[in-house]
Image (cartoon, rainbow, N blue to C red; front, side):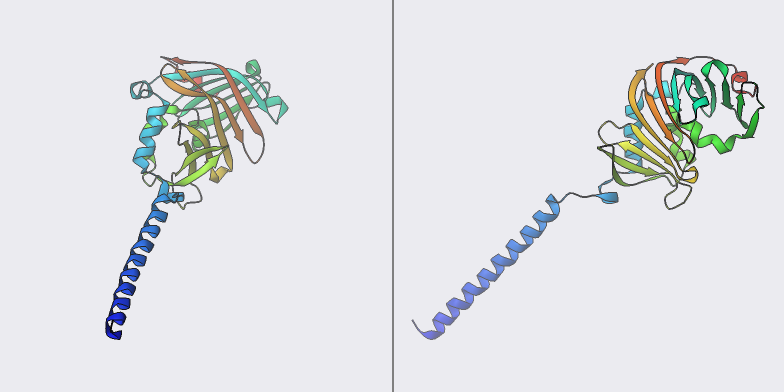
Length: 249
């Protein structure tokens, strides 16, 4: 075989090998990206999808839309001794009434005022807005109004919460006053909430179906001061509650 023919054959073989190598490289790179797990905001679905998942998990929409009150009874364990004991909670939207230790401490929020009245003491009153986020944790129906109340609400990523993967929702992304909501990817339920402006953290567990709505029977609240664990043993919805229930007394 002439030298020219040998060189041409070698050149052709080299070109074919280079083409195959390039194709194999592209295939391996594509395979890597397709098989690699995506994390953070890139893995998160849209806010509409997460809200829909949570609303479906928490209960029947018709039940959530009912204007009834939720009554809870159980026990409160607090790092402040006088705030521990049997507890009754009645919540209706943004309004709430709490009775601790058979009346040793009464608390409530109506449209205008948060009030706190220890037995034999004076009534403390502050504007209701200061407690709005805290009171809202008891209201399962609030998911129906998240987008209306927080126009910028969005999914900002995923995070582990006590061993569970959760979507992270921020009501005001990038704002120091944002609330962070953690929706369990598997159950679709809210399992943690952080109110950054007040340095409050809530965790939710032991969900029970009450009149078609999932209600957490264990809520832990940590604050810069006291911490509380609410363990409820009874829950029911009440069709009618007098507004006087939520007024200072």
